[in-house]
Amino acid sequence: MIRPATAARFRPGDAVRVPNVEKKGHVRTPEYVKGKRGRVTGILGGFPDPESLAYGGAGLPEKPLYRVCFRQTDLWEGYAGPPGDTLHVDIYEHWLEPAIEES
Amino acid sequence: MSENGHEHEHGHPHAEPKHETSPWAARIRAVEELLAEKGILTHEEVEAQIEYMEARSYENGARLVARAWTDPGFKELLLRDTKAACSQLGIDASGTVEFVTVENTPATHNLIVCTLCSCYPRAILGRPPDWYKSPAYRSRAVVEPRAVMREFGLEIPEDTSVSVHDSSADVRYLVLPMRPPGTEGMTEDELADLVTRDCLVGTAVPREPARV
Amino acid sequence: MTGIHDMGGRREEFGPVDKSQHELEDWERLADAVNYVLNAKGHKTTDEMRRAIESLREYREMSYYERWAAAAEALVVEKGLLTQEEIDERAAALERRWESG
Image: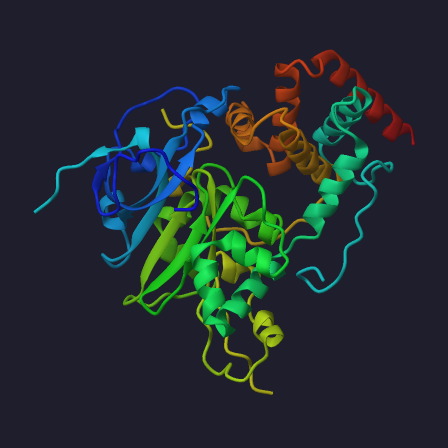
């Protein structure tokens, strides 16, 4: 963690899913991870909410920001690389929901 | 020293411009003049910011890498707290932006991109290269990183995983590359010379020095 | 609908990465610096800037610092720091001066 975070909902190792929803305004969650499952690898800390900052707001309360790891083969159909290749995106807590663990 | 080996003098930004090719050249000058006239900013503040950015280059990153290669304690600090590591080398990376350094290993090669804009660790490395800001790099680095790196002449073996980092939010990433073989006994400055700008983004790796 | 700026994975739209580097012009350094100074002095935030850039109708046709210049202009007008009329007027005057000079 590089900044202190308020009570964080997820822990490293948690399986998460990015909700596949459209949201108007300024969003820092890239389209290509929407609806995809990943795993939390770290908590970066609490940061002002960019969706509020972008319109002159104070961005409060701060949102926990997570490092989320996705398997490339889960993101792209026909991914041209070995199954171990990963993609890491920083995602604010309100853009994550718990995912059911795969057995 | 700039990266192609010679200095570029930049004109005084308030001197009469030459060869300004964009209609936005006059518009941003108009904005800056008017803001200064209204006391919202001063020409001196703008000048100081230009100097600040001109003073930054990937060579700061090369120094961080060379020190990390020669000092395990520093490497641990760089990976845990990049700002603190910068501060130890006299690199001013203070400010609200956060930095994370990711380490290349025989098992993992890291590649940095920003798909939503062009986030880059500017306070450390200076302005990003044009290709980093290009739609081609921003769109393709996440979906076909190996093909993109191949275009840069970098082939990552199949038994090394590629980790792509999309710096979508408040953190800027830089890569700590692996120290190449054949560099035992080299000084820190000599090691820093092996680290190019692209090594710090992940589109290149430091090469073993050519035998003279 | 994916925003114009949200480029990740849209590989079919773009070819090989062009690795050539252009020499920065003075106005580009100025656009860069004006934005940083306005942020540092609390007149706008990085996210307002990103939002303004994403909202540019000509996003794809503009160069990187053209987007910065355009977004800075839009934000100083939005925030009431300057009016569109005074910017237009001053820019036209500068253009005239450069052409005659």
